Every structure is written in C-alpha cells, then in structure tokens.
Image 1 (cartoon, helix red, strand yellow):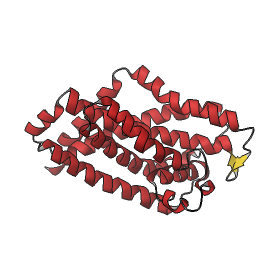
Image 2 (cartoon, helix red, strand yellow):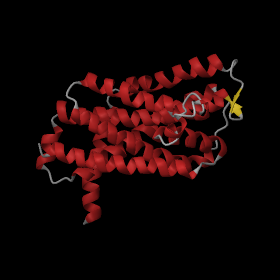
Image 3 (cartoon, one colour):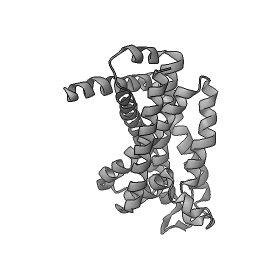
Image 4 (tube, one colour):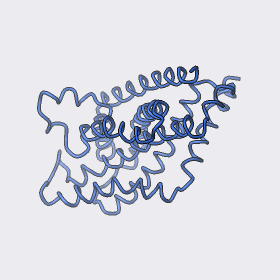
Length: 256
C-alpha cells in the first residue's frame, strides 16, 4: 500500500513538471543554452590566452564542468520556482491539492523528481554543445558518482525554488530572488575561479556553500574521477535541510 501511495502521489506531480517543460521545448532549450554558452565564449575562449592553467588544467577544462553543473542547478531552481508559481498563482493547482488525498511530502518529492529529470536533460544538451568546442576529456565512467553529487544539489535548488514560487504572486519577484540569492551562490562557489583565490577571511565560509561542493566536487569527479567526501556531506546536508523546510512551508501554504 505504501508503494502504491508513493507512486500515486509522486509520479503525477513529476509528470506534470515534464509536461510543462515539453511545451515550447525548442525555445526552452535555446534559453538554457544561451547563458552557459555565452559564459563559455566570454571567459573560456576570451581568457584562455591570459590564463594558462588553473589547478593543473587549462582554464577551459576548469570552466566547462562548472558550466555544465551550473546549468543543472539553475534549471532545477527555475523548474521549482516557476512550476510552483504556475501551480499556485496561475493554474490554481493548490486548490486541487487541498481536496485530493495527496501528501505535501509527495508534492515536493514530485517536484524534485521532475526538476531533476528536466535539469539532467538540459544539462546533457549544454554538455554536448560545450564539449564540441572545448578540449576537455570527461571521465564518463565517473557519471554515477557525479549524479550522486548533483542530485542533492537539485533537491536543494528545487526546494528553494518551490518556496520562492509559492510565496511571491508577481513573476518579477522570482527574477529578483534569483539575482539576490542564486547568482551570488553560483559566482562565489568556484564557477569561474578556484575558491583558494578568495581572501582568507571569506574562504572558510565559501568552503561550506552547496555550490562550492557542486562545482569543486563536480569538477574533480568529471576530470579526475575523485571527490573530497566532505563535498558530498555538505551538499546532502543542504538537500535534507531544504527538503524538510520546503515540506513544512508547503504544508503551511496548503492550510491557509
């Protein structure tokens, strides 16, 4: 009975997320590619003549895994934020959730599962394009370990996005929250430069960011098939905390 309930509660939500993303998939794919490919051209090609190596690899090899991971995390956040915004403020799905026998945990888990699948698909598209232009040798046998790292990252960003989308009735508030919260997390987490380049007073804080774990850990996995286990502990801790917080938050919204 528990398994049947789980399937009934989680998969329809995840399927709904996939259907929403399937609408206008060509425009969505172009929008997804635009940001990482622009960064790749501006920083990877533009600075490769000025930056010889970073941590023993070329700057393009340093940058490319980070851009792939950035795409996955951003898409997880965007799917959670806009999906829940559509559910609450546009399609009024929260009213249906109130009358259907579905648990709030299943709703959040469905959003996470759907967001993770969407993020992986779009991350794969970006990876295929970037690897055409970048002389980076990816350790494909390391993908299972990489998924073990990015999945909790997707949980964290989807949960944060779901709370944002449920809270703000105006769509421009979602863009503002991304600028204020998500963008600093991405830029300070070692996407464009090693965190060792930061001043000593801020370094200890940056080391414990979930994006630092995702970028530094993901880069080590894809290039070297190795990861510091503290990165996995950090990102799974953020994932668990955000899941509990998002479930409680969504339950409160359903009871309003």
